[in-house]
Length: 215
Image (tube, rainbow, N blue to C red; front, side):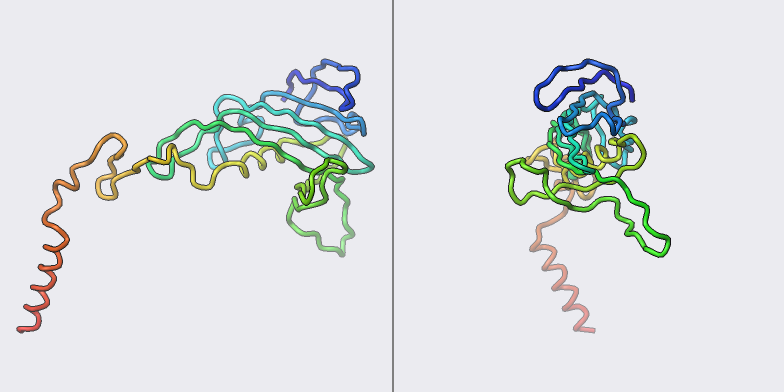
């Protein structure tokens, strides 16, 4: 994805307005002084599918990248509008999307043939040095080559930020278990069509038991 972005030092140095790839910055451009990237990304650019998560239009991404020795630290924010399906009424609804992220990249090292590498691509590692926050682990990713691939990381962070049980509202009445009508639009006729009360049901069961005992 080619987009206008801003590249500048984290120390407030000279700003350079340029056109570069927000999702695949060059490793040589990421220094100890830092590199800031920003852009508006679509679902396609992030590799999102309908099964992953849905966003309305684009999501704004702002990232700060800093290289310390052989480790790259990435902090930033993602903002936009997410589209969720309510677990009660099954209707899609829009919800504000805004969260921060903290991840670490380390260069992938090829293991000897005899060694068995774990399948996991991500694990927890140390926090960003001198960030003033305590007891907070960052997600660890790996990179290879001369570019950093940010799309898989951003996609995963966006999926993890989605609620497990999205609700269009706390007052959502959901669907009728019998006819499937959306009860937010008004009551269905299932209650009116139900015959008798719970006590009538108990009387019927009692009569059946009596009839069985008389046989």
